[in-house]
Amino acid sequence: MQTLNLPSHLDQSPEVAARFSKLKSRPVILDVNHLNKTFHTHTTLNDISLQVFRREFMCVVGPSGCGKSTLIRIIAGLETPTSGDVLLEGTQVSAPGSDRGMVFQGYTLFPWLTVKKNVMFGLEIGGRSSTESESEARQWIDLVGLSKFENSYPHELSGGMKQRVAIARALANNPRILLMDEPFGALDAQTRCKMQSYLLEIWKRVDVTIMFVTHDLDEAIYLSDRILVLGTNPSRIMEVIEVPVPRPRSSSQFLSPEFLATKARLEELIHGPEEAEAMPLPKIRLTHAGDDVE
Ligand SMILES: Nc1ncnc2c1ncn2[C@@H]1O[C@H](COP(=O)(O)OP(=O)(O)OP(=O)(O)O)[C@@H](O)[C@H]1O
Ligand SMILES: [Mg+2]
Image 1 (cartoon, protein in one colour):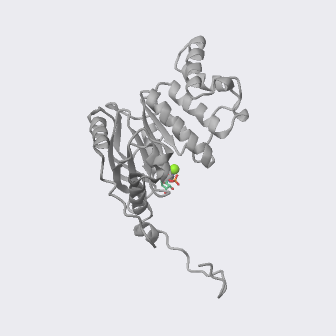
Image 2 (cartoon, rainbow, N blue to C red):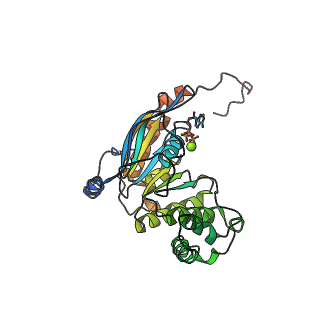
Image 3 (cartoon, protein in one colour):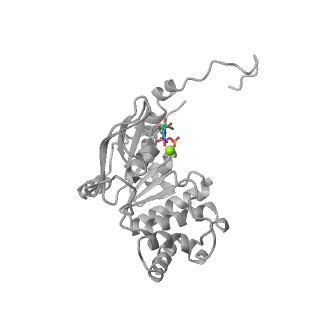
């Protein structure tokens, strides 16, 4: 098989290198220190330390079960670590708070509330008056392009539209960080692509840092400044990759040498020989001699 002669994912153009040096000069917004999480006897997270800079877009990838959701849930304050801590703008996280917005894969809107009421919900809980909440909710609904649907109910919306409402609802509470766990995982490929560019547009316009879990390596490269790669057996940070693809991003970059080099590195880390060894196939044969497909 012929292989492409790719550059290293570590090669950065002067523009990309300048972008990273600017990014790293920003204040650290999220500081994860020596985080461990054990469920019963199983170590899910083992000594995880990382820092995320203000307005950074970081994706988290890794094989199923490596602890991506557990990490996000600890940062959200939905799960307590066994040891270690998480600081958001210097304050220790111990419970959920409005400084963190969450968007999950499942559609988590209240089905009995309209789009507008769903977005107003957190604002009203936070003590805003109904009029104030309504006018603010409208701005967020407008930002995600759903003004015409503000009086619709979730069941009247497509999957992509529901996730846009979920993003508007999360952003309406003015979080410092948006935590997204496979938010586009249930969408078809085309809608997913549209949602990715939507999210980048929103991120450009709102002062928010994003941590985004995905299984889709193209999605991670397309969206991220840096990609956190988690591994299993033992659980650890395998690498933090600075994506060498310039911004603004577009789908035409999917076949660029720097995009492919990053994907090759991710494939190597996630699906390398170690991973194949970790999940041996059972030694059974259900086919008959002579009907091999390869
Ligand atoms: N509440 C829990 N109780 C017991 N074990 C748990 C719990 N939550 C997670 N785990 C275990 O921790 C490990 C990591 O789970 P987690 O959901 O964080 O993985 P993940 O990387 O998000 O996987 P996936 O890619 O499949 O979503 C798994 O082995 C899982 O069984
Ligand atoms: Mg998960």
